[in-house]
Image 1 (spheres, rainbow over the protein chains, first blue to last red):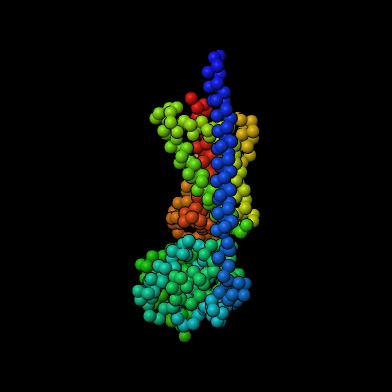
Image 2 (spheres, each protein chain N blue to C red; image 1 turned 120 degrees about the horizontal axis):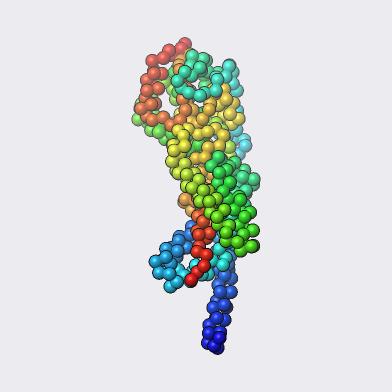
Length: 225
Length: 179
């Protein structure tokens, strides 16, 4: 081996032995920068505005009457014709609120703040209401259930306020109301006539045409009294 | 560190992994067009000796991040999260061993796990952005469409997983010998 070729071999060897350390150092530096940025820019969760004593997140519903069977399908739903148990609790401001037979046909919408389908359906329903498509004599109420501060989009009252939600909201912190109506998925709809008799249950994102259809059926039902 | 800080840290690591993946893929493509010349050959020459170790590090960090979210932050893993764990957790064991032994034949076992896990991550990302692909409503327990974390405007947990799987797959796909 000549002196020049030996020198070239040494240079290549030196280059090969240095290069991995350079790569490792670059990776370590990048990870360190990421760590420093995270520590500097991090901070509180920002979702902790609500507290345990907040009526918008801690209300518990008292159920009176027989619970409805677990929902599986709108077609042949055994709950149709049964009486909705009365749901008593508080709204998001802490004021008493009851859902049950009050002489007026009612659409009840159960929502969970963390559910993406609920997040998409709430503005659809609100727009439907804003467009004046909720028939005269039919009420729309909602139930905020499955409340969990560890889940996204918490607290639910802030979310609903952001969406301009105008329907009354019953707070169901321990899922008592959800269980009493046989809820199986979110969003969940229970439709009752004025006597509190279940006319329909369904789940999922409804279109405004489907809301129209439900409301028109409901408008024809007994108003109780 | 708070959950927010850990999430930002992991999101930044995911961003780094994505940049590294794109650069390495570009180098591989450029090297295929013009072998052994210019920056692609130099970059691949520099990365290959540490590729197994880096892939092992990515797998370990991914596994620890996943365990942090479920065990410390109390974000319950959904069904698709578990499938991605099935892909990533074995990598966190076999890649460090392969790196220690400099055993490149591990790619035969690790690449299917990385590619399979990455495909699940892609599907999970689609479910997050288009929840109706999975179903028309939310499972009351733990639907996969919930976005537990979103940082830098786009990095969610399956995004982090996909970034890890992609970088591991590219590192394991580096040619055995650089001419």
